[in-house]
Amino acid sequence: MRYFGTDGFRGKANEGLTVDHAFKIGRFVGWYYGARQGRKARVIIGKDTRRSSYMFESALVAGLVASGADAYMLHVIPTPGVSYEVVDGDFDCGVMITASHNPFTDNGIKLVNHEGYKMDEDVLEQVEDYIDGKLEVPLATGDAIGCTVDYMQGRNRYIASLIASCGFSLQGIRIGLDCANGAASSVARPVFDALGAETHVINAAPNGFNINVDCGSTHLDQLQRFVVQNGLDVGFAYDGDADRCLAVDERGHVVDGDLILYICGCYLNKYGRLAKHTVVPTVMSNFGFFKALEAAGLRYEQTAVGDKNVYACMRENDYSLGGEQSGHIIFGELEKTGDGIMTSLRIMEVLRSEREKLSELTRPVKLYPQQLVNVRVANKTAAMEAPEVKAAVAEAGKFLEGNGRVLVRASGTEPLVRVLAEAPEENLCQKANAIVLAALEPFKE
Image 1 (cartoon, rainbow, N blue to C red):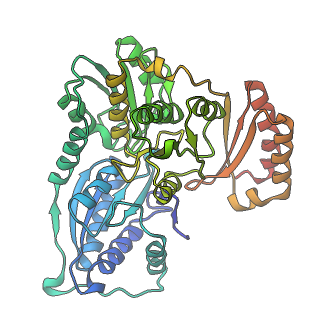
Image 2: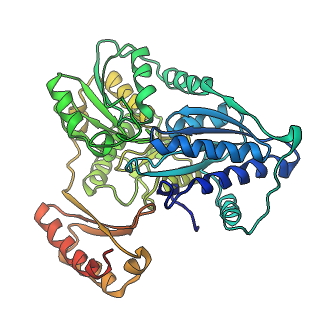
């Protein structure tokens, strides 16, 4: 793919991803799902709170209606809200404008097909061909020109669906929410309030520039302090588009995606709701997590990094739970993509049912120390394919003597090579990583 990576078309706003790109994406999608088939397409658009999201929204809408499609604007909404409403509202496809956990200077465009899944690659390839001028798309004229629709009721239906997924009350429970000044800011609190929780919210005042700044699922320090200082029972942190969630227990300790998969997997298995007794994590998950699953009598199947890969494995094998250490958790019976707010509700289901504190539920898992280093490089492919880098990875693995691992992979959305070492002791992680980092030095940007 030339423009679309593992998580959409990403880039710095009006540099790597421009308003012209957005217009062309709208033009192609509006034609592909509409005039190409002799009909009028219906497409929904959501966005996060970045300043540039509003610009890209306008460009996408202009492209859609110029090709004859009707554009339904959900406005600010979590990415999973778009996936939900595509199906619930019977739309042809959906578009989400977001760069997830990245800085406000970045943005991205994600396309969702009519089933609520990430767009099929053959369609994305055609979008790329149109962007590059290899395809022609006619302009709509006369009464064939599309219209725009203010579709706030779609967001309200998404909120209602989250509430309806819970057959329990949160009365008397004190919950902290860190909305990352992002898409969860106008959605998360109404859900927890409706369920009766005593809800305490931080970082829910977006101004276009403060999304993910020292807050949310990538910066948990603030929520950890907030939970402890206010005597809360649990805290949840979302990222910019609220498709991921990490938790903080009552003691202020971080509960990452591995631990969330563990407690939810054990709970679902206990009540016969975990398909094939299997959890689907990625290769980034912790050795200690795998050992804890085995001790609990659960199986697991690892995938490559990316929630897209996790869900593909789940669909192919009819598994019901999977996710990533970063907090992308997918509950197959309820959703088609990671949903941070849904994840926090499912954790609360476990806490209510088991009548245990979060710290007690995670106690059986003894995580190995990990050290992750992101190296900014000029060319990811060249760095990953270099013989000296491959040799260094092998040397680092040999150094750990089977008591750990070194995983090196290229970021799907940024010019980074990620180097992860995992071992029983932190100093071993540092030494193993140092071997690989030395080999990557000549490839730095």
